[in-house]
Amino acid sequence: MLAEEDGGNRRYQAISEIRSRITEEMETDIEILRENHPQLLKELREIVCEDKSG
Image 1 (cartoon, rainbow, N blue to C red):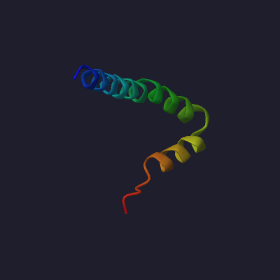
Image 2: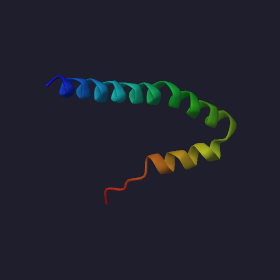
Image 3: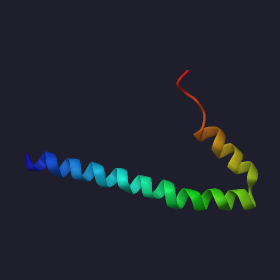
């Protein structure tokens, strides 16, 4: 039982860390690309926003 709780805590911690990276570091990266290399930003958006469900 304790192992399950520990696994759940690790999962939550990992998800929280990824969200933090997305909201903090990714915003900075996007701003840098916007100012210095708009073509790379366009490529990033095409990859990230690509709809692969269809």
